[in-house]
Length: 413
Length: 225
Image (cartoon, rainbow over all chains, first blue to last red; front, side, top):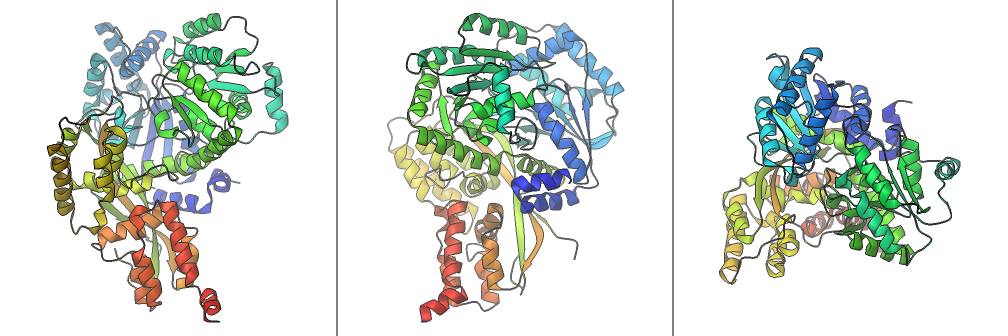
């Protein structure tokens, strides 16, 4: 059974047939994706399914990863924070290091292709150091919520875009005027990955047992890296506000380290300190390959939280909705695109707001259930990988033939 | 592309959206944008936005009405914009003129300019619609009726909404084709009368299915008895 056959069981034969149809038109393109890690974070997860799937659709696609010294990741994490609006301090030597690592990677990597899609700021400067003619079209794919970036970092990004032909953002709100087309493509999840596939009851209970979580009591879950923008401390506060009304509630804050995030351990320590010795709070630092564990936690939750203060898109929200769970999310970034009040969950603007909405959903089980069912339908239609690929294909067609309407004839007759 | 032969060609479509880097945070900025953005932007926010509707989440059928209602809190203008049916205009220029008049008129009567909170701004977007022949063909009314139940919502959009633009408001692809194969006039008239702009794509599918059901040979036979 091919990958496409397996996806067909989830999204239907028609969707796969349409993808094949669009892919036929792009069969002569070689596409390379470049990012900065094979482990951890949403980008690596997307590329892990996208590359083999493109291959099955007859498109020559590869995945390359830039590497650098630890200091490079410190700098790129600072870029990331700065693009998300946090005050950052960068020295000229930091910019120089970023540029130099890009130069070395451009020399090392084989980037000969019609289209190279560069993900996020880490490899942004590759085109500057790649010989002319090797790549026909460079596209920068930004996964970050850049709605209010620090000016110095955004300016550095703008300079880096000089040799690109287009950019992609997850939402219009993340864009700023550029001299390049700014395509809007929200990311997506893979319904067959270990993180999203259906689990047996035995698998689910085994994970809960391992983490000493009581399967008989309601569980709230937030899955995210230990990052200040994910507001794990706000989640703890919401839990504390709720606990007097629902003493049986448990909370799991689970996240894994990402290779390119040196701040994680510091935030984790703060969260552990704040959680104290409450036996109903589980702080779980999971290895990057803990997909089944995350899957089990999300499926065991009565409500999933994603109380971020800034968020690129929030694939953990998509995952939770796909599993039929209502989500209470921070009113930011892509969360607002997925969480619609009274339909798929609630947007919360403070820890008190999150606590209030949890109380509401715990009180009205029928609404909780209905919102979960809505969420799954919503993801099926809009946030599975098939829609994501379709958007990519549409963008590539537009790159060569801009205009308001484009017709692709059927050439097999 | 028209569907007027003896065989119906089923198309599907995808929308490629591009932010134009323009943002409105109050009604005056929206008016300025309405005066100057290109036609593709208007077309996206007034018509193609139907492709992005989820369930029955939205009360109004276009982005501008929604933004005035939810973002600016201007319910009056939201209602007025919700009533504008862009498919009744022969050109986007005429549509633009009416939109500008409506918003100007509203601004004229207000003491202060309505504005939105940070994070609720209107981000202007343009789009390219990529329509591709699916390879599926129908030659009878029954085949088309059966396909309506299973075709993608995007196909429905292309053959109903987009067709009205392509054919300058006269008809949709389904009824145009049915006319060419001598289908019952009453069926064609009912299809053409569907107030599609008011419906989201799921609701539209249900309405079309009902119409085809009413005109299926078995239903007609039962009615005759």
